[in-house]
Image (cartoon, rainbow, N blue to C red; front, side, top):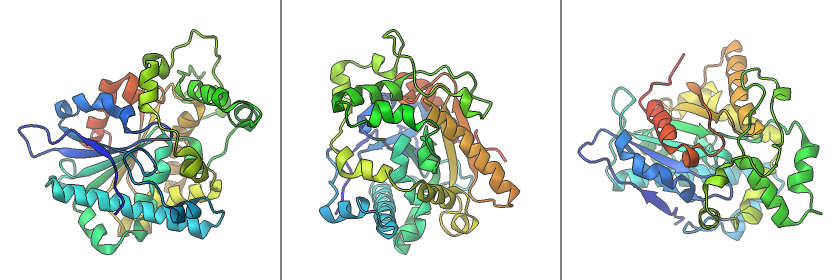
Length: 350
């Protein structure tokens, strides 16, 4: 049986009226990147569970047969791979909920139950819980419905929604050029992903108002500025990149676009699979262009589907002011405050 390594705060003391938040990390950074949230969870009435995805330390590596599916160019094999990810995550949630006697969702839908949050590109592996809900075995689905009430998307990049890079030359030159040594490309990626961006506008919804690459003058603060070298080494695990991560990120954009539609903007999926699950998309004001653009993209999609009279799942879109792509590291208290408000329904809107 496949297993996930995880950290668990346990239930908040003195109450059984709490929500369990299961967190899925992104690429390269394992569950430890969320460790600053752990001591804050009980104060917010939250049970926090941080899991390591498959191929990350402590969790079951993907088998050769599974890697063949994700490394293929066959869309049918991709669907099989991600359908399996939906099933194994659903089975983990159900098994954990039953073993730990988690409180089920109350009649208001705002207390108890389980919320699943995926950060950044981790949504590729967690969002199948919704977009491939029809792959989950019926007994597991029925049990999961007693707990599952919220899916939170934390600062996802645009490509996960099926949108394209607005400046491929810039990013290809710095991050993907094979003539540049891997260590130098990794240093460039770390700076790009962890920088604070003072975009000319985060409300215009115009891509020309987004900074594609930050100036690197050696004086600007990044999330990594708040980590020691030993912390950065402790929090990262790059072994999954050549095995499953890169292949998962190179799937056709139109496929990601369809998976986003199925997860959030599909009336049949929303009605037949976890109809009470709401979605919250969080984006950070000073994150890199791709995540700010994704925040805009969700609003664009929401408006477009409403015009087509598609209801889908209830979607809230929330901005974290002043934060970049690592709010859980640099602003843990602010991040937990936002999550608490989402969990208690304060961010819901028509």
